Length: 208
Image 1: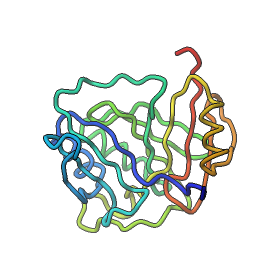
Image 2: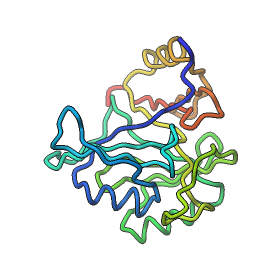
Image 3: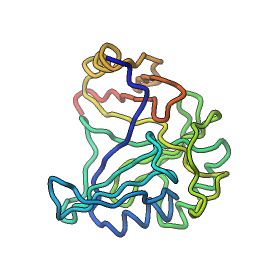
């Protein structure tokens, strides 16, 4: 099997379709590149948010299920989706998010990079990571966020797991990732550094 270079897209669930569009398009500055339906459930929207042209590795999609209850974070899930942002842009993002009613969860440094973490309107974990070498994207010129601060595709996803070893083996033995190190309870696996979304982090949370 050819090694996986990075994430192609991430799919999540939202409750209110308009609120979902308002946040990811109007606040985070991601273009709504496509609106279709869930072909297994045609009464449900399927939104695609990305850069100007929908570059692989920048695409976050949502199924809008209005009757879904608010999610509860726990083991066995992708706990956070992280985007690359230019170095020095986190102050802009913290101010912009606060202006739009989003309270930061925490700011931290992780593997030498500054991270701003928050939850989207449905409670999903989102992170912005300052990165020196940004992946190439097609900036949405008509969007609400200047290129200087714009999101540059995915940085990583974070998995919360009870055990590290089974998923680590899958990533390294079958998918072409390599182990890059441990920081506290966070285990990092990387693939092609030139590809967007080339990092998978596993946070070890035994028995929780």
